Length: 432
Image 1 (cartoon, rainbow, N blue to C red):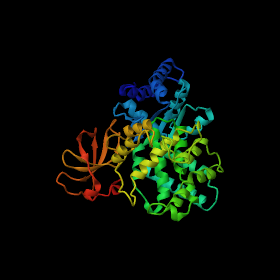
Image 2 (cartoon, one colour):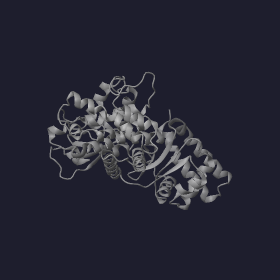
Image 3 (cartoon, one colour):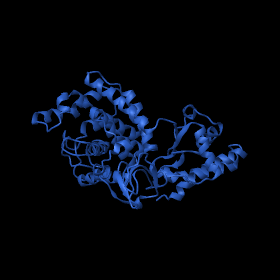
Image 4 (cartoon, rainbow, N blue to C red):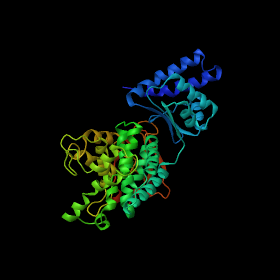
């Protein structure tokens, strides 16, 4: 088990390399020793997780999701060098060698703002730089626009372009890696007038969160996000009156609705470069863990495990959405319900990892603190594992605040209980 102390050694060792390079050339034995020390610190995490990421959240340098709060000048200098190169983060992969790490440090020292192009020319694949990019809300809005365009093409009988969808999914994956909880919060902003589009983006985002919880590598996350985004594409071929019908479907209407996975597969199979895993997600996202649901798979047929992750995401978004027959579950209550469905409808291991990743009070949960304050959980894990960021809505005296203030908690020990927003007349989405 890798300790927090081991993880904190990584930025310190990299900062030492930068310092050494100010005094000696890259081939000097002192610099080589510092490079090997850096690799030694990084290898356990690379071997365990298949990757390692340095990045930023609210201006704080992170190693994976662990904030580096030390104010040592060398570490602050490392963070500034990364910012000067217009990077949001740096991702390392197994097989990393000393010369590749040296090249990265050389480019950081130069202030190169196009390290990605430099590495492409040099053929360095074990290090990927993450450029500064849009906020989670901007990424989410772009995804909505792309989904609307892709689905509208399908509705009109045109073949949707896969390239723009893949490009947007890559941005979503980057955001899900760097700010998973902030991106997840966007899924609680329901647009009921454009439900099909919103649901498709939400399922993609939630599936990426499940994938992060299961430590999927970036390549698999891209497939997962794409499958989530396109999972309901086949609905564009179904009568709109059936799709938008508020009440229970008739037997014949339900039969037509159950055809949408097949229609979706028919569409994406004609699109460019759609991987088999994405097609599996579209085809089998209504097939449950116990093999009930639809469509039935052939005996002995293997389908991608990514399907189970999208099924969890599909279920979670449905639970947290207002329906004519149910009020929406809070994220916390939705997790409780997912656990009840675990082992039958849903994959038990993935559900448990997802629940642990979101913690006991997921983003979007309204809570009462021990001092009487009522606040909304809006983000987490910035001040350390299990830390929470809340937005204060009602003060200690029971007064609704005009301008909500932020509260940072080291953990959930100050939380007394979850609060039903309906009982307090609070619309959670107004505060996210």
